[in-house]
Image (cartoon, rainbow, N blue to C red; front, side):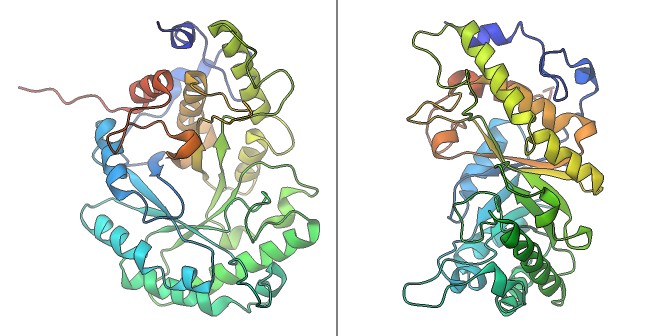
Length: 360
């Protein structure tokens, strides 16, 4: 029983600019290149852990690719998590050294959580340069482990409210921008760290200020990034009604995509911001979603199709995109598992796989 996957095969590809129209530019999408040029592909396995390196390699094999970039995340318990992350850097260093072209995107806290009983760490203090020494040490470690070509996803998802560096007020937006600039300037100044690049990365949450208020400046941002998940609280979208047909689900999925694209802090707004600042776009995390309250699209091939088009449309100038393959979003059959989203996984494999080489 094909269900929604069969319905999808007869639907037009939805364009980013007009979710109700056929994407006339679909034939002009960028080709798959096995990570030889943008858009590069990555896999983000979980946070925080050494990165699921084996799963990154399995992912590449699943898509008939030889090269996929990895993503790793530091913890944010204390400053030791930032400047002494041997558990993270050592395995990734070995992985990068084993094959030319490999690269890692590291999620790095802008400030850690505050241990019980200590004076709180704040963006305001960070804006003065008070924490720069910790990041100087991190830069030295990256150089020592030959990870000096990494992308640093600094203070990721700053517009959300769940990390210690959350910038949810206009005042903290300014402190965030200054703190980010302090860290980038410090890390780049370390000998051998000149090739490090930095991603300014949000998640599309609503904010009481303009994006520019939290922007550190073109001189210290190399990529503008946005995390994108198939979840929505828009009216008439998710959860699906009981016994919804495949066609009814697809209608709601189309509305969910339109909600993600439009709005003051939607995908189109972030793309426009990147273009205005002449910065390549990154999608450090994207994924399907399932929640207990039903506000995710679940097994949604339509979302996979739209993300493929978004990533490969040359107008969007996407530099790298990484699927976040964990928990609610897990779709890749790695580690001996089967996909929790079989229809979406089938389309994912069809769209993102390289052709099987001919045998003679």
